[in-house]
Image (cartoon, rainbow, N blue to C red; front, side, top):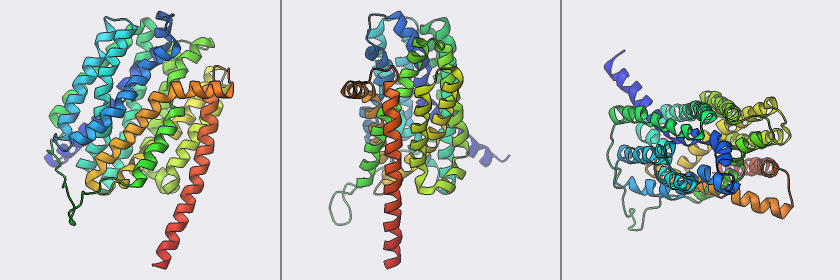
Length: 399
């Protein structure tokens, strides 16, 4: 292998390593049930803050991350993010009550928010054309694989002691070393302040915000899979943190497989890829609502992974293309990530409001709401995409 080829391979590995950081938050998700037991006086929504606070911080820091690209290189932003993730993750393994852990999650969330849009932006920055699409698909697969490892590790550690799950953040160290030594620093991307006519240069389009709002709504109901799974498994006597980690691991394994073959899937589904993904996630919740065994939960997790693995890269590419200019792709992605974070953070509270409004008392009421919302929403999106595609065809024929 030539030196140039070796360099290219290491650049790809380093770029994909950034995606690993996005899934460090999943290490503590399987421990939520055990943490709830350790703090019996705490409300379920308070315990869920450990999962949802990073999403709230992502709302603000994803926007900050997009703005910082005008002053700092992508590599420097990622470096700052890694430091915050490590500092916000490790201390809870040794000290602190629930309030302390929440504060640490705020610090972790700041780093999480900074790095989230950069995981896609670094690929758009370093690669072009078919190679960029290929690496973006691999990003979803690598992220899913990381989630599989991190979730299983977190569940196994939490089965011994819930604090041990935070030790998983030590994995940030080898990831950081690869990024520091192998990821190129391409410098600051300066953008023009005015366009040719003297006006302010347009960065985003209406479609950027439409897609971001749609993602916020989807994540509002979808995130209940992550936040409710451990508690439902424990409450229904199906298993403990280790079983919760198994289900989450199978979900990520499913998403990994789909991510690896996403290039082929997108050629078949084309503009309907995101709608198909949302539909599959909705169908997975139908299975989860009626699941009364590990087998049924695993089937639901597999379907969820197929949907997630299809939706994620499809919507990311759509958002990047929605920017007014390719150089503003990172800004568009930061808006989309912010919308995702809003949906995830509001998820427990919005679903509680809907449960009470609909007078739903089942422990899986959140999943019932998610199933109906996602299936209806995906079918509506399919119709809208079809209508838009038809209008585009007619417009081309009349030109």
